[in-house]
Length: 289
Image (cartoon, rainbow, N blue to C red; front, side, top):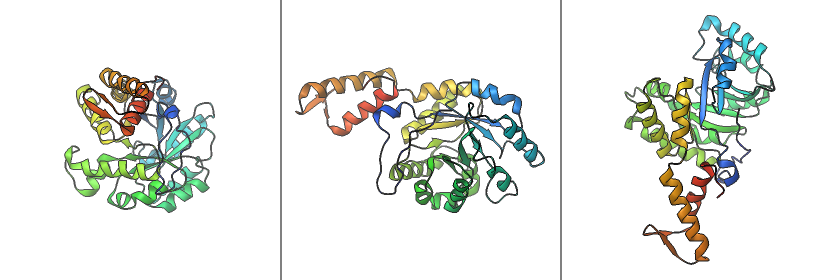
């Protein structure tokens, strides 16, 4: 499992990951049901940046205990994963907490995150890194405090549950405002850009690419996925396009040759924010900036 570098998340002191770590920020998060242990190793081999073993929505109530036991038996420090546990108001939450300190659990995903106190319970149980699924009006209302809580590595948008909670129909422009709120809260808290919700169309690569690029344009830094077949599209969508890389290279060459003087590239002025954007594009492309 790829993990983020430790980045401060003190409110009002936003920081971005350095150029050397941007390319290491995970962009793909693959769910696998906790009740299907025969799929755990296959999920790890599928090529996702992060595998999320799911004890919540993917597991029926009657299978919760057996799924948890299967996960506990499989977990190993040499196969780090993210574990999505059940919500804090369920009867399964306390038992799920017992897995948080396991060395094979590199991060814990808290669904329907809404209260900082629940994050503190995870931390006390041994969770070192916490991913928060924002899936409700209450979670959005407390977004700033949640993003700034100790141990929170990243926010994720549970867009389907969120829309149901608010009675919103559709997952297009109807959710634009709320997506922007996650991006803004992450930036203010100094954590990595948030993770966008799943695309339910498994076999429609056109829809998947469109929704992934939409999240990228809004400032998201990754995407949840529900099938290995979605990984290639997600990875390619988050890689800078050839035209972006070429532009970034032209900007940095021009800036380096200007010796601090004003310079234009493609008829547009190059200043410090433009240089930073170019550096980030090349970092994500895996090139030396």
